[in-house]
Amino acid sequence: MPPPRRAKAFGLIIILTVLITFYITSGARQTQTSDFYTKTQEALQVREYELATKQRDADDVGSRLKAAEEAAKKSAEQKGQKYMDAVSGSEKSVAGRVMIQDDEKKPVQGVAQVGGRPGDREAAKNRKATPEEHEVEVELNAILKRSPIIIFSKTFCPFSRKAKHILLDLYDIEPVPYVVELDEHPLGAKLQATLGDTTGRKTVPNVLILGVSIGGGDDMEELHETGLLADKIKEMGGSRITQASLRETKSEMRRKRRV
Image (cartoon, rainbow, N blue to C red):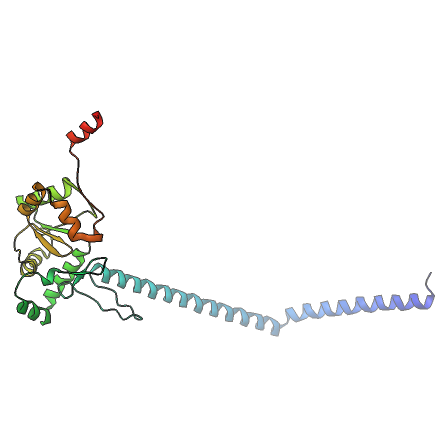
């Protein structure tokens, strides 16, 4: 059993501890309910709310700016323009103003280089295009990007129907040739006139491979009947053409099944 003096000292320590704890707790409660503490907490909450609002607004503005930039980039690409990168400083191109290149970076004669005398082509190249001509060039460049093979056609033209039947029905071609019906296109007449000046072919159909005209309906029929069409497409299309072969007829498919 501890001596009385030690027991008294121990009891006194316990009493002091309880009193100090009570004082601190009471002071904290009074501080939290004081006018100064309340106003300080409210000011801090208002400040935090303002900072959060500014951050949210900044994030919204950043998102909108990014979305606008992406939309502008997509719009430019759809209109046949190469998006100018601020770092690389790459130049924009417009149909009829530059050489068209295949995947192997070998320049081929594009729309702008076909037809006319060299002097006339150079003068046309250096002449500043009117807004109307620029609109046609942009649209033509956008069309040329749809597929390596473009068929400029008219819905009522029998020669156009012949070319489309041969290229779309009788052959498996990948990517699939893209058809432009000039009589239904808002710039159809201007596109046809531009193609007449640049390719030397003023009539439809006008079949282009990588921007080079290979003829019309009769030309497609002759290449098909002589068995040269698939090879011609592969030769001119290069690596851009992944498939070009004559489809099997139903009779050939039945014969193979019997065998």
